[in-house]
Length: 107
Image (cartoon, rainbow, N blue to C red; front, side):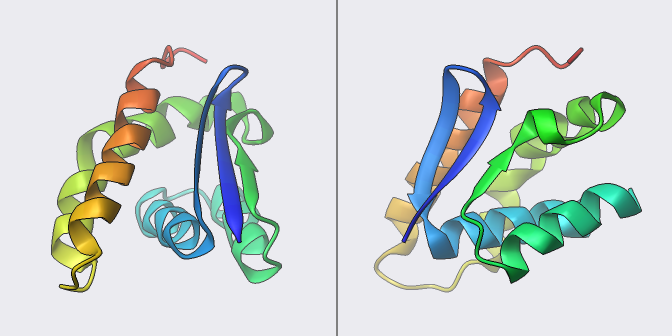
């Protein structure tokens, strides 16, 4: 199943459902805001397959973008299983990091 993260109109990232879920779970472990975590958990638990940054209160968007830019790849290198698919998964996550870099953190 394909899944989608929309950081802003025209800046999005598609992935497999498993990598999408892992990415949202990465955010859940690092963003200390209950309403954001609850929103992300609902997406994962119900296999909704899309996350729109605009659905998060504006005051938390910059933090999410910062976590994606600064922490996502290092976490993936540590946490993803050592399989022959890992290099491709890391490359694909790098595309999300690059996309997050194209979004203004101020909202």
